[in-house]
Length: 187
Image (cartoon, rainbow, N blue to C red; front, top):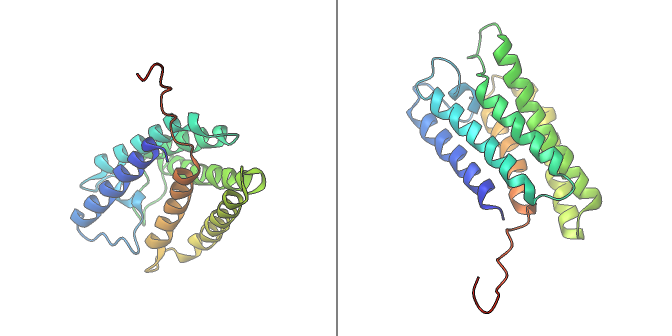
């Protein structure tokens, strides 16, 4: 387990839960994380900063990733871009920044899904391969269903599944930092 990835996930989760609870009219079942970061939302700056921090921590943690390092870095960079470029609130014409946000968010998740399938095919052991295939299948199914649930009472929950599965998978497959070698009983 990589502490940087855990820290990023905790920062995101706490920020989204607190901002969501304190944002009037926000419903985590039907509203997305991006809505909390939209212009005009009371905690938009904090949510956008949490997204950027999460992306930076993903990039920093990528050194502990195997052959999928490039895809993980791409995901982290795309997450940073999604945090910088705000998504427009619902029911307004999409601005260029909003289109960049959506494209970056899709790119981030697609990169992690591709990494899942790389591990599913070439993972170190059978359990890792099976878990990666399952995570990849769940993430793809959620991504396919997601656009069809817009405006429903599960839209926000499905988005959280799309965020949670790749983040959990990434934390689970990342090699832990190696303990320093002891020389003469001193680290």
